[in-house]
Image (spheres, rainbow, N blue to C red):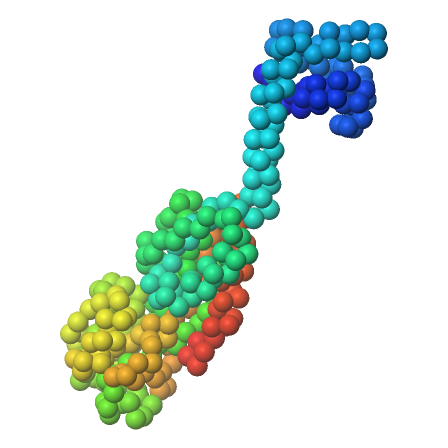
Length: 305
């Protein structure tokens, strides 16, 4: 196989017309340059230089190799630069998994920071619930993922993962504007007779609501289900039910009012996870950007853990 170090030496010898001058420019001894050229000649099976007492003359093969070799070395230098940039975390590919409310309220600002700091990095985004993205992190299909866990619905994380807390958000009772509960600090018992709008059956949000109501001695009467909190808020604004939503899923818009439960404050805990063994240097940058965004996103119903 041709050695790129020897190729670079040959190009320099052809350019300078001297073993000694090529050695000076490359930081070698003249003897080292002579040995590299001899090794190159053995590799290609042809004499590349006519050697005289005080000079050398490149053969046609040497001129052709030097001409094409210059292009190859330039491409190799570019490739080497890309590899160094990737290792330093300046470029490469980062695959992020997230859930809808974080996609809307947290991720865009984190991506804006990453894109500004790392303009050459390729960032891909996939959206799904935690139970769907966690297997993808474990198999390496995703580098990092935003996930959550509800109070009353404890969960454990695979030991292969590093779990970094990002944000704690209050669970809010959302009611139509003008609802009697909007004027008071509401208790879950006060909503026993209400129709509820919940997330899909089997999700952590729906399970949390069921367990909360069960602790108060009743089962919630579910009228509608949606995992889209904009749809949930529109349904509440239309007066067809009330809902329990995380703070990131609520926007203060006309037609609805939201407040924490009195006596039973509950929270949803947002984390970013990645495989501990993942060596992608962009993972560190992603976690840092998400933590900074969440620190600045703390509002009335959200807080740092």
